[in-house]
Length: 193
Image (cartoon, rainbow, N blue to C red; front, side, top):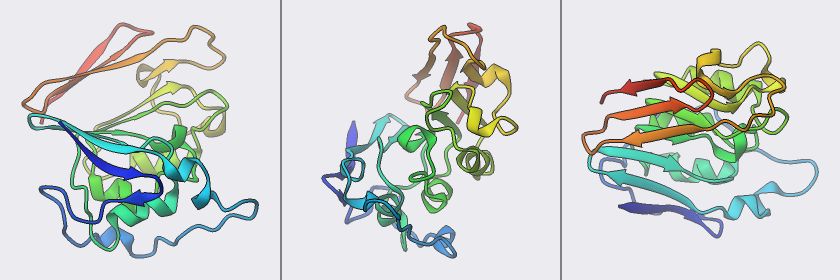
């Protein structure tokens, strides 16, 4: 099952099941302004964002949705609700990944589809690691921009200067349990609800 969260610069107007409460994480989070172009009118701000559900399992993927558009979905009220898996927005850049969003959806696991030099902002990695309920952060690549902040090697599919193209796979059960496998190591970790 899937629910629409964003598309064509529009976000949810009514709360999804289990959501709709005031979001205290909105306090102190400001809208962003950009000095170059207006990022909120870019192609990224028109990203399709979806909430996938499989029984009790909930996964949020907002594509490249930008900071202010993410904020619309969770401020002043969280219209999404808690999720089990959050795919970090926009490769983990700080034009996205609004802390009000991340703290509202409270993921148990986050996965960042970054490159060594694409996304993976240190501020985003630090914020994700501090998210309520987060048990693990996985990254596609070790991030040059967050050299001291990357998660442990066991949670990174491609280490520094790797050209291997390893993957991260998530398998979900209807009871909300998920298993994350690192293609580089072949090792899996299971996260029960």
